Length: 189
Image 1 (cartoon, rainbow, N blue to C red):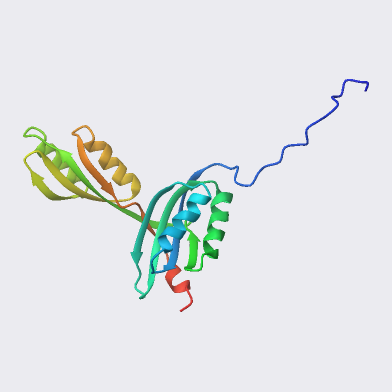
Image 2 (image 1 turned 90 degrees about the vertical axis):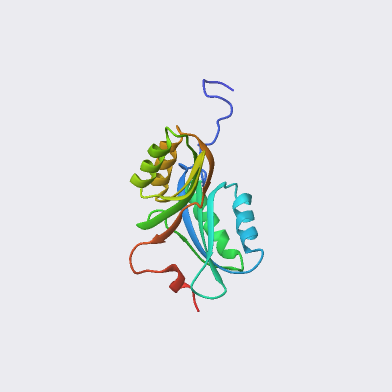
């Protein structure tokens, strides 16, 4: 071999599917309400290497059907592939990625906040200012119910963290697309 060119050159790199920027996605799924469906949905997400941030499941107005709101981080291509695979599960009737759509989002949290005589009034005022509700009062703690967007709940939690959080439970977000369209009506009856 002669010249300055290397004997072997690597092929040009290609963009791999799923190699994009990871962001929060919200998926809504209508499923048949029977044992094992939740396990199959979460197993599929695990197999696709997604960590589910939150998963809210509830009955719908229609007997025998449930609605899942799945919050997870991933790039657009990988989430789209996972959505298509969800459709392959026999008990999944409809899946919609509402990430880019205008939605109404709500989350509920119960927060047990440490209080003393000097801080009780401040914690109660903070709950009132954030439109929360006091559910329980004991000598050394207050349980607050707060709801709103994920950011609003995060803000409340950050505000009471200095007082001391004894216990915290969050439902995860539930979302509904704005406007007249309905994922539940889109399911064939």
